[in-house]
Length: 104
Image (cartoon, rainbow, N blue to C red; front, side, top):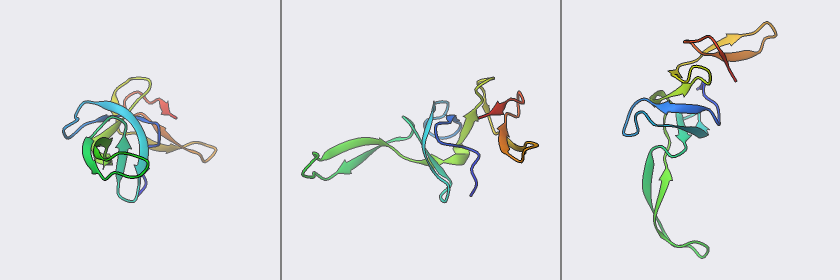
């Protein structure tokens, strides 16, 4: 599955328990259609103790579906679903649907 999102993009959550929060994409899972966003969708995981680290409850981010996040345009600072457009050189770029600005 081709995602229009990239690592280190700033996104806003539009659905779920963290609706309205923003964060940066840490990791993409294109085969599953999920993204890992920093400080979003915090879950508690039970860890067994190891020789190097103690066990117990550990809070960590969990992936969320890419349809529940929208890219924040750097110019207009609003969430937008970008459109893909080809330049004359053949390079594909993302364009904001609201302001028409190219998103790098």
